[in-house]
Amino acid sequence: MTAHTPSKQRPNFIQRHPIVAFFSMAYAFSWAIGSLLIANHHELLRVPQSLHYLSAFGPALAAVVVTALADGRAGLIGLGQRVVRANVSLRWWLIGVGTPLALGLATIVVYALRHNALPDLALFGQVDYLGNVGVLAALALWIATYGFGEEIGWRGFAFHHLESAGWLRAATLIGVLWGLWHLPFFFYKDNFIALGIGGFVGYLVSIMMGSILLSWLYRSSGDSILIAALWHGLFDFVSASPIAEGAGSAVISGVVILWVIVIVRRAARSQPLAQNT
Image (cartoon, rainbow, N blue to C red; front, side, top):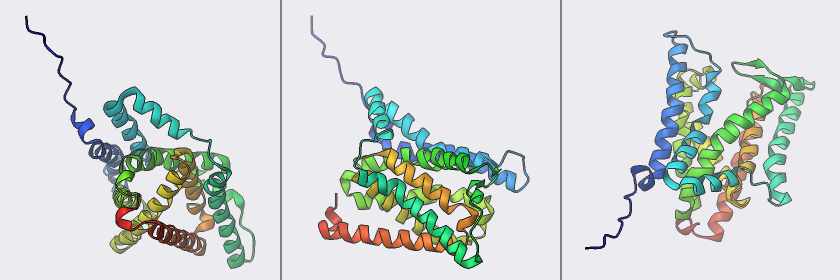
């Protein structure tokens, strides 16, 4: 009798191409919802506009599915550990939570200077498509959706897999794909539609800068999705508020741009861009 050695199972497509699978799933889920909202905008059908917030979970859902299919239980445990990683230094807690709150304070100051009066802080509870849900509910919504819903995918999965080839390169590439993920917004969300094609290019650049900042924060905090998600959610909570419209938004954008320039310059000095890992 001839002994037969069991052959190794051939890796499936997702195991061979996890990044392609991840972005395909993230786009498919979020753009399917976006398509419904575009049809709603053009009165082709009626769906709740609040579905907009459900689309934010596309990256997280894709990260979980691809991780499960490619890496199994061990991969899911690793992803889950990064989601709740709170054992980071005080410095990164202060940056992750403190800096977006400081930007919120800056928007209040700018508003007060422009209007010669303090804003009604209840405006931080104003959310598109949902109305004024209250400050705490709005904060929870932003952190859950565009905080964890996005960061579990963009940083916790995509960047985590790509950073070994050069973290700045990975952050920039993800920034482009992350920006394109928002494309349906430009066909149903009024403030995005108003930006036009030229505005989309500018928006794409701003998203790339956000990707660099959040990737830097993620890796510097020891791969903590928690810290990245809190920063992202708090930033959106502040920047999406009516209090930040106009000059306040410009101030926030200016601060982020300068911050990213400093990050990139320091990274370039520590290692050449071509070898930056």
